[in-house]
Length: 176
Image 1 (tube, rainbow, N blue to C red):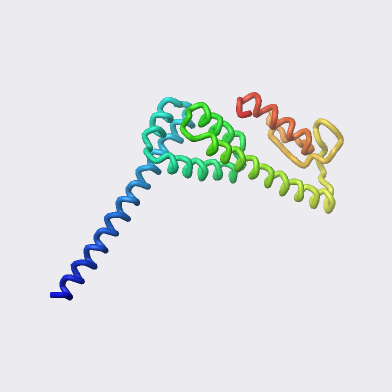
Image 2: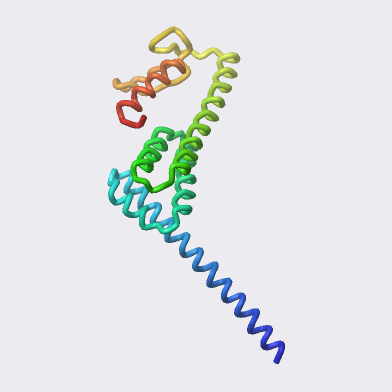
């Protein structure tokens, strides 16, 4: 009789833990689905729908965690202006608390600084060891960055002028 009681008790604990784990997994899957729908709406510039979806997620910590992951992935793909754009939207929507927004902004800045430092190190190494055959379209420095111009031709720019072009493009497209 004791053995049967112990078996039933153990089965009950295992069953309960499966139910708890399963419901947590289902809850996470639902939050993931809602969050992905909200991101899709943000990308389609349907802000009201995105806010509605994000507001329906009950746990704000889950929303914050998903945004950290998403912003981090944008930074990893070097989409800093897009990441900033979304964080600015979140500020106006009052979805996250100010502290959470600050963390996202700092994360973007840190990732961008890491990239800039790595890029500078690479430029220092490559400029010192080999001669680039292209000149900047604006000055006589080495043209270390290339873009396809309006005419369809490849244009070369030094880091200074390339960064100015990127800044102008960000201003034109409202990403800054």
